[in-house]
Image (cartoon, rainbow, N blue to C red; front, side, top):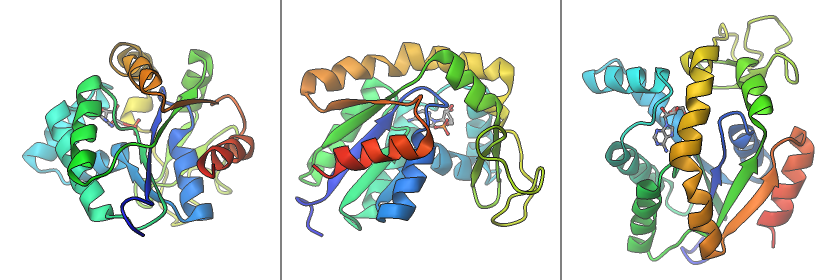
Length: 221
Ligand code: AMP
């Protein structure tokens, strides 16, 4: 796959909008490459190095990790990915204007550009409900929802058998802070990309398969 044929798309939206779920589904169904910012940062945080401990503290509080760190980590992930499929989805990055500028630089050095940005729109009510019902497998990273996608055996991952956990940042007191951080630091990106003509809004209130169809349609044009 040559650089010019490879599409780079970003998923933006509040926590709980369904970005990660859709990215994983598109990876399994269509074979797209997926770079999930939160998963890469969580893997670093789990290493329990000084750096990992600091990352973990920031992430558990619902605040954003600093732009420099995230731009470097995602830049490396894009290098590793290196045109391995027709579409690469970057989920959860950029989350600030500085990160958007950082991404532009990373891509332009490779002679590439961001093709599309999908904005997953959901109400605060849905976002809070989805985050509070989320359970996460710390081992294989599969995500469950206690209302819409329950594990067959209570509290146990159906894929690898590990005990499911509640992410620190899905605890009720942190969810509201994450929504605030989204409004203040990430929402300004919508105008940034709208002005560039690459923003596509999708309805994050829709069910998993319906939303997936909308994304497939938009990605195939
Ligand atoms: P997520 O899994 O996308 O909800 O991200 C979980 C946490 O990881 C966020 O609340 C932030 O602390 C951190 N994080 C993920 N992506 C970014 C980013 N692009 N910039 C800064 N922090 C991030």
